[in-house]
Amino acid sequence: MTLSPMFLGVSCTVCPSDGLTTVSLMGQNAGMSTPILDQLVQRLKNVGHSRWERVAEAAGVSKTLPRKLAYGDRTDPRISTVQPLIDYFDAVDRGERQLPNPEPSAGHSALVERSPTKAGA
Image (cartoon, rainbow, N blue to C red):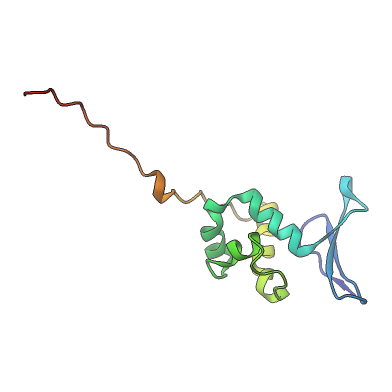
């Protein structure tokens, strides 16, 4: 069974024997197949964890889903669970959406520089 392409330059298929969905890359990577979840996890890792919450919000999924996928906490999600993320990245690839700016890290807040005090002043 062939599914509609979920990323530009790929075709998606479901293997009848094991039910795994694979992505066949076209163009310079023709002949290679990657499970669709692995493709999505790699995309999330490339985007960086500081953007995951905003990507999830833009895609309309749980804020924790990108983290769970990237760290392997969700190894067999339903396609309906990950489809919004796949669609989001597809729209980014087509130039219809932009990746969000990274979230500022709470541990790296701006430091206030203080001038040294003189002893005895």
